[in-house]
Image 1 (cartoon, rainbow, N blue to C red):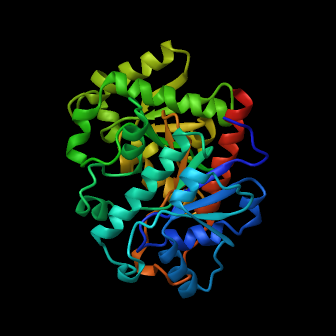
Image 2 (cartoon, rainbow, N blue to C red):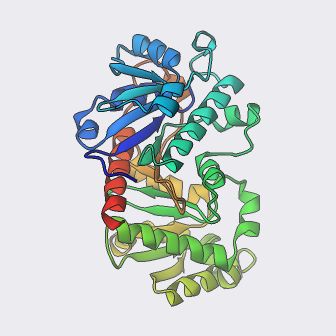
Image 3 (cartoon, rainbow, N blue to C red):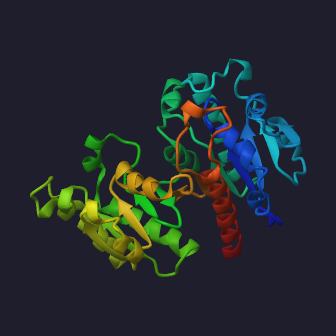
Length: 340
């Protein structure tokens, strides 16, 4: 990959009916972003124009078609819209779940990933998508993490939420709670611990300390609760990661894992399922946190919140998480270039 003075970050529009387009238009004009990278909005120009008008926002000065971007390699030196032309903007209804919007969001994501795999951009930053709209559109993936894993060919990935207050990683993500125990294995637990430690080594500390949650109340209390998942699945995974050189402890009772003393002691907490990590994280860092996909060849960051259909296209969305996500994408891009 050629070295640029500023990394190119593909910023996907997200669900057109949500707050993603507004967040993109706001973020690409923020000096805290443009001083660090050149953001390229992969979206639909028609939708972005409608949102700009509704929210009194300015569009980037330059718009290129997807064909121009893919074939002609136009020189880009400032924020730009790459018009993927993925939806009839006139039919898009803000705040409503629509299969057309799920299809459009997926198309923008796949196009951005392709650009990253071809070294046309250094990282991908994603605006929120609606999982129901994806399903209605026939997309066979429940969320961004699974899309990035499939399209980059990554065998082991995990979701990490990062902030100044707390870092958490999830062993399982977008599955029903009843399915979680069946997806836990010592190898999976160990791999998520190792991915988390590797990310922290690159971003924060050469010797990170990791804490691990149990699955059940009181971490199972020696089989009193659950089916001894802590002893059978989680503890062996912790030991395997420890044998691989990670400083890791647990499993801890989940209700005590996020108290201030633990947050000071550990650089990250590995959680067994989606809400076990998301609830404390969003209590502490909502609108400031960043979602990272670990384990893929493509750097991917994202906001840590959803589409907020209730305030879509109203100019009310808080862009704090998006700004953080773009800054993290730029930072990780520079770290990768430095380490190559």
